[in-house]
Image (tube, rainbow, N blue to C red; front, side):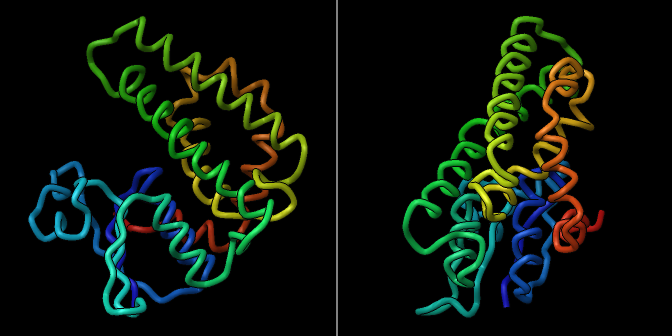
Length: 211
């Protein structure tokens, strides 16, 4: 059994989607970051960076194993199950490229844009422009890539798509106002969102945790 520590954020939705896609049994421990529950001592034993998501796999080789950071968890679960990440060769590295692109680019930039343009009471025009421009660039990069094939790593759905889905969906909803000019010019991204969002496991994962 896997214990999943998560919350209802784009990062928090990645691992429920992956667990649903893999068909692994899991239990959910909600970590309400709005109440600073990520700083609780018991959670810090699992995630020393006090961030969600994190997991504990009671059936890991060698005994219970805790894993934090979404990219590491996605890779771990893919290798545990043999799903959504090729074991070797070009297909593996294409998926890892786009997984790390999300971790290092799309997620952080959209997160910063969300803070400065939406959540912050004090608006900082320079910061808003900086992160709007970078979010625009990244979504256009994504659109070009998806013009070459149905999924980010190519023909096959992978951990890269799982990592990107909730963040990209947030770009079209929570961030639709600052990104309105961009969103009208990335048709391949919208097609990919629809294609990915129709997967039953994605629908189930996007409802975890229930809040």
